[in-house]
Amino acid sequence: MAFKASSLSHRSALALAEAIIPGSSAIPAADERTVARAVEVIREFDPRLLKVWQLAQVALDAAAVRETGRSFHRLGVTDQDRLIRRWELDPVLRKPLSVIEVVYKLVHFDRRDTYEAMGGKFNSVQGIESPRWLSQVHRADEWTDGDDLEAEVVVVGTGAGGAVVGRELAERGLAVVFIEEGEHYRRDAFDGSVVGAHQRFYRAAFALGNAVIPLFVGRMVGGSTAINTGTSFRTPDWILDRWCEELGTDEFAPAAMARHFDRVESELQVTPAERRVIGPIADVMARGCDALGWSHAPVRRNAPECDGSGFCDLGCRTDARRGTNLSYIPPALEKGAVLLTRLRADRVMVEGGRAVGIEGLSPRGRRMRVRAPTVILAGGAIPTPLFLLKQGLANRSGQVGKNLTLHPSGGFAAQFADSIRGYAHMPQGYQCDQFLKEGILILAAQPDRNIAAMVLPFAGRQLMGVLDRLDHLGSFGLLLRDSTRNGRVWRSVGGFPVISYNVTAEDVQRVHQAMIHTAEMCLAAGAKRLFPVVLGTPAFEGRKGLEQFRKADLKASDVIWTSYHPLGTCKMGDDPQTSVVGLDHETHDVPGLYIVDASTVPGPLGVNPQITIMAMANRAAEKIAEKIGVESARATA
Image (cartoon, rainbow, N blue to C red; front, side, top):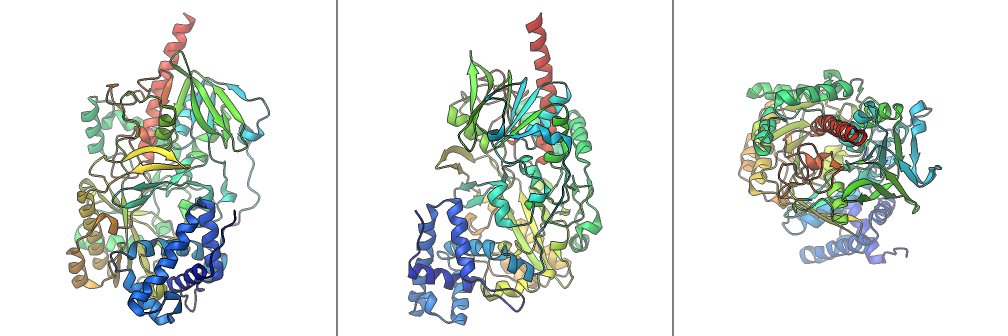
C-alpha cells in the first residue's frame, strides 16, 4: 500500500529539511524534492519505518511550541535556525534530530544538481573490456545447466576470506564453485552516488546497545574489499603474539605468518600511498605530528595505480584498487572455477554427519544445490553466524555469534588556512600511528562533496558556512581497538540481523582521548576551528577551546560511531566446548565444513583487517588442501 503523508507531516518535514539545509550562494537549499527522495529511500530500506519517520518530524515540529509558542513550520527562518542549534545541544532532542539530519543530508547532497553545484560530477564509464573469465560468471536465475552442480569445493562468499581460499584451492587443481548473494558489479557501476552505493553494494546492519553503530559491510562480488579504502595493514606483531598465547600455538607467530602476508601483498601489489595522490592532508598531518614528535607515515594500500579520482567506499571506477573482485576471483575463474551470483546460500547439506554441499535460493525463487565434499563458509562476521544459527549448525560450544568486536570508530574535522581539497585526492592515504599500542589509530578520512555534510554533527547556517569552505576542511577517522569482545550476533528478524554491542566506558574514554590527540595535531598544524563528531558538542577554537573539550564528560550515545570491521563471531580454538572452528578452520561439529572469513579472526586488531583476513585465508587454503589430499589418498588406498 502506498504511503501517504498528511498535510501536517508534510509541512513539518519540509520545514525541517529547509532549516537543516538552508542553502547558500553556491549550494542549493533543500526543497520538496529532498523530502520526496527521503521518503523514497526510507520506503526502499523498509516501508515499516515510514510511519516512524513521519511521526518523528511531527513531534519535533510540535516541540517548538514549548519554547516559542508556535510550531516549527510557522517560525521564521532565523528562529528556525536558532532552534535547530539549540536542539542540537539538547540531551533529549539532539538524538532524533541527528537521525533526521543525516537522512536529509544523505539524499540532498547526493542529488545531481546539488553535487554538481558544489563542483562534483558523477562518474560515467563506457566501453569496459570483456575478458574471457567473464564466461565463468553466471547469475543463478540465468544458469542453464540444471539445478544441481558437482564440485570438489564450494565457497560461500567472495570477499577477503572466500576469494583467497577459493583461488588458492583452484590453483591447486581443485574444482571450485563460488556462491555469492550479491551481484557482480564492474567499474561502470561505480557512478559515485552515495544512495545508489548503499542500495546496491552494502548490507544493512546496525549494532544496538548503549549506542547505535551502523556497520558497513559489502554484499557483492569482492565483498567489502570492492568498496573499501584499500588500506592494507599487516596484523601488528603484538596482536599475533596475543593470538599464540590465547590459542596455545606458535602457528600465528609473526615469523610463521610472514610468508602468508608476503603472498597476499604480492598479489594485491601493496605499496605505500604516493604523496601526490594523498594530497595536502599529508602535509597537514606531517606538520602537526612533527611539531609534537609523533610517528606518522603514508598508508600502505592495494591500489598501485590510484589517481585519487573517486571516493573508494563507493567503488573504484578505474580498477586501480585491487579488491578480490579483481585480484583473486578472475585468476580462479581462469583456472576453471565457476561463480554463481545472486544466489543466497540458506542451508548446508549434511549427510551422515558430514557437510556435502550448499543449497541456495535465487531472487526469483529458484533453488539450486552445489554438491561438494568440502564446504567453506566465507560470508563475513555477520552473515556467517546468522547462517549457522538459522540452521542450528556447528554450535555445540554455544559460541556462534558471540565475541563480536567492531573497531568502533569516531570522527573529527578541522578547518585550515591550507587548501586541502580532500574530495580531489584519495580518502585514506595518511596515518598517525603514535598511539597504536594504546588502541588508537588516527587516519585521514577525506570525504567527497556528497558525503562531507554527513560527517559534520550539525546543520543549518553553521553547516553551510563550513561547506562553503569545504576546500579547507580536513577530516579524520579515529579507529579504536575494542577493550572487550562483548558484541553478539543473535538472529535475523524481518530481514535484518539483530546485533548487540555495548561501548565500554574505557572505549568512550579512548575515543575522547583520540579526539584530543587529533585536536592537538590539528592545532599544531595551524587549524583555525575544530569539529568533534559528537552530539551536543559545539565546534571550538584554539587551546582554550581544547581544554574545555578535554573536560567534557562524554557518554557512548553522544559519539557518532561507525564500524567497518566486525570480527570474531565464530571463535577459533582447539576445544570443541569453547570454540567453533579448529586451528585448521574446520568446524568441530561438522566434518567437511570450514569457516574462512572475518568471523574466525580473534579480534580486535586495532588496524584495518583486510590483509589479516586474507593472510589467514591463504594459510587456511594450505591446511584445507593438505586435508583434502590426505582424505583423497585414503579413499583410493
